Amino acid sequence: MAERAGSRAKGRTGAVIVAAALLLSGKALAQSSSGSGPLNFLGSLFSGSAPNSSQPAASGTPAQGGGPQMQSGGPQPWSGEDGASGHPLMTASAIKEAAANFDNCIAGMWPDAAHRNISRESFDRFTAGLAPDLHIMDLLDAQPEFTKSIWDYLDILVNDNRLAKGREVLTQYKAQFDATEKAYGVDRYAIAAIWGIESNYSTQIGDRSVLQSTATLACVGRRQAYFREEFLSALEILHRGDLKPEQMHGSWAGAFGPTQFMPTAFKRYAVDADGDGRRDVVDDPADLIASTANNLKKDGWQAGQTWGYEVVVPQGFNYMLADRARMMTMTQWENLGIKRPNGEAFPHPTEKGYLLAPAGAEGPGFLMLQNFRVIMKYNPAEAYALAIGHFADRLRGGQPFVQPWPRQERELSREERLELQQLLAQRGFYNGTPDGQFGGQTREALRGFQASIGAPADGFATAEVLERLRGH
Image (cartoon, rainbow, N blue to C red; front, side, top):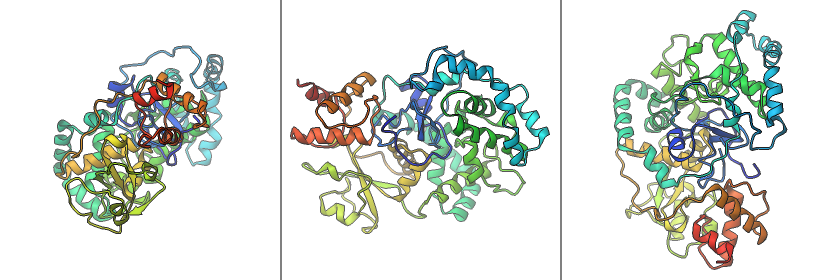
């Protein structure tokens, strides 16, 4: 997709499958080369990216981060249809041809496996009986017809039941969280929030074989080069003995474990916190907590710093300043009229952040700090990072957001989003390829149109804005 931008793809898939199940059509992680999110749910909310991590859109590479995985309910057949992306490797004939060559494709990866010091015995044992799961091709190219609003998304993920379970987990594993905070300087509440949102505290991890999923994607479809690396990394994990095949079950794109590591992310970040000789991010709480913290630390987590602040944006504010590239100190934002809703002062006036207005001029604003950007590396969608940050604050004892969301607004359907982009293009505001997926380029184009008609240029797509574009 033309607009999908975001943080680098690192290795998690997901991004709120419970939400995706309720809001879209299931856990079909629409991945992009820079990140992922089920059915591009996160990216099409309001982010300038599309689909971590634990995260598809129609273009393909899971990033890490995501959300509770839905159980697949057993194998489902492939539709037998061409993929929606139009990619030549996603035609029905190309998929059938690749599937027929699956065994040869797997066998052809032995030299690369041997180069990684995987033994022949391990290669043969772990690849024996593998067969392609072609239903994944339908998920790889799935397109969402509808998305959910940011406020509904937060309602689903940051709820009383999940908060209660999170507090239990924090108490149960206090010793592990204590050790991890001391070793890595990463806030325990952020780790607990990721655990809760990615898998609902290990209760919704996913039931697809990581080996089968990554092998399928390494040999069939349009993301073979990317998933070849994931498949070989999965073989390395098994050969080393960190995990067993039955532990490596998760999303259809290969993310596994309570905080949804892709195999390549596991290799980069997994640690043996309890010294038992294995890096078990599935069933060992010490390894799971420390590995997730190591991930965040290596991505630039700032110890002792929060993720951001809810703020009140004054009427008449120039929303062209709401850009993640525009980092200013809290004092500078205050001088522009930005205040905290409870009247409190910013604790560190020299901290720098950018302004995010996910629901436009009618909703709350947020000043986002470095740690928010770190969470976005886990899953490059602002909606995901906002949910993690808010959930962490609530686990710490904080209160819900103060300002109301514009709940009277409805999310546009994919057909309406596509029409909006086409109309913006006709008026000369949009230069991308209309695809129904909203990102930074659409937001900028919409701001330009809003400014031209004297409306707040907040880049928030509403039914009213669409009507104005239609000339009504």
